[in-house]
Amino acid sequence: MTTFKKQITINSSQQKVWNIISDLGAIQKFHPGVSKSYYTTDKTRGFGAARICELQPSGKILETVKQWNEGTGFLLQIDPIEKAPPVKSFNGLFELMKINENQTEASLTVDYEMKLGAIGILLNKLIIQSKMEENIEALLEGLKIHSEKGLEITDVKSLQKILKAA
Image (cartoon, rainbow, N blue to C red; front, side, top):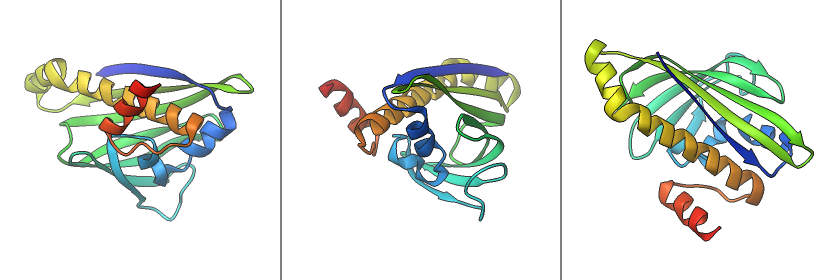
């Protein structure tokens, strides 16, 4: 099992950040690795709500809410659909913590287990874990920019351009 946690301080209220992340169908507005997202359930909030994320440059994952804590976070079960890493029992825990009225700490804890036995473990050590950590850092940077400036992050290049200009 591989577990890691990334966090970032966002200069926005917890309620504003919550309004952004709890709109599950709009993750492509701040996640540079997602080109399109849409619900697969009638339920759009809370336990059981689910979305498909189409990844850049290719791939698809299904994310289903397994735990929902209104205003503070949620746990997603992530299931690869196409062109995604060979993982099983893949989860992401998104949490928000109020620092003060205008600052929020957003964190994302990821845990997953590789398929393919020893080959999967080796792939994870050589490539997959570092790529996943980069993607989570980009997601959090995108969330920060979107929350603070209202800008939409369409891909990694646009994120890098905004970060360099800051």
